[in-house]
Structures are given as structure tokens and as C-alpha cells.
Length: 259
Image (spheres, rainbow, N blue to C red):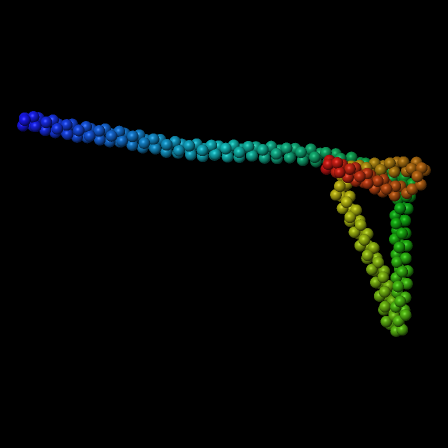
């Protein structure tokens, strides 16, 4: 019996030792595996960090390349634009010089012909003489009105005061009406000038005027035979009709959405 107990005790201790050895071996295995995975984790983190650095470097390099390409493209575009602008300005200057030469030639030949045309010269003088006569008559009429208004001052008993009031009324009446009419004429002329220069002061208007002038000069006698009208006045009326036609056509096109 004692021998059996000793044998069981011995086996029990052996089992405990085996269990302890197994636990130690398991702990060693777990520690080894844990260290291995920690090393692999550190290696993975290192590789991820290197990949992130490479990605940032590649991104920076790509951005630098994109900026360089954009700068080169912009520089090339600006160079080509400058070259095209230079060529366009040269062609425009040549075209303008050619047109200016033709214009000067047309104006000079037309003016020389107009000077030699007795009918046109006569109508030219008559036109400005009529305007001057109208201004003189208007001033005389205004002066008569001022003299009529100044008679109110003559009713004052004191001669000195009557004389002063007489001339003051004359100056105020004549000067006031003259300034008012002059201001209205200036305002109307400025509006007409602004209206004309804004939309109609172009090559087409100049061409129409020169053609009308040339026709009036070269065919002065036949025109006078058919229409008894001052040639310079006819030239102005033709240009007014031309502007009105362009204004009407432009209004129609604007109403239909072409402008």
C-alpha cells in the first residue's frame, strides 16, 4: 500500500512537472510568435512610412511637373499671341494706310472738282450766306425785342435812373435770350454729335458721304436741272436720310434679337 502511494505520488509530481514544462513551452512559443508578429508589424509600419514618403515625394514631383508644363504652355501661348498681335497690327496698319491713301485721293480729287464746278461753288457760298443772313436777321429781331423791353425803363421820371434801367433791360433781354438759345443749340448739337459718333461714325458713313459728295460735284448741273435745291443742303439731307435708314434697320434687328 505504501509502495502504491509512493508510485502515485511520483506520477502526480511527474504530471505536474510535465504540465509546468508544457505551460513554459507554450508561453515560450506564444512569446516567440508575439515577438515575430511585432517585428513584422514594425517592418510593415516602416514600409508604410516609406510608401507614404514616396507617395508625398511623387505627389510633389507631379505637382512640380504640372506647374512647369503650365508655365511653359502659358509662355508659349503668350509668345504666339504677341506674334499674332504684331502681325495683325502690321496688317491693320498696312490696310489703314491703303484706305487712308484712297481716302485722301478721293477727297482731293472731289475737292478739286468741286472748286472747278461753278454750280457747286455757287451753292456752297449761298448756303453759308443764307445761314449768316438768318443769324443777322435773328439778332436784329432780338435787338428790336430788347429795345421794346427797354422802353419800360424810359417811363421812370429820373433821367439817370431811366437810362440805367433802359440799358440794363436791353442787356438782360438780349443777353438772356441769346445765352438761352445758344445753350439750347449747343445742347442739341452735342446730343446729335453723341448720337452720331456712338453708332454711325464709321467707314460706311464716310464712304456714303464721299460718294454723295462726288455725285453732287460731278453731276451738279443735271441735279440742279431736275431738283432746284441747294447742292450742299441736298448733301446734308441725303446723309440725314442715310442715318435714319441705318437707325431704323438697327432698331428692327435689335427687336428681333440680332443685337
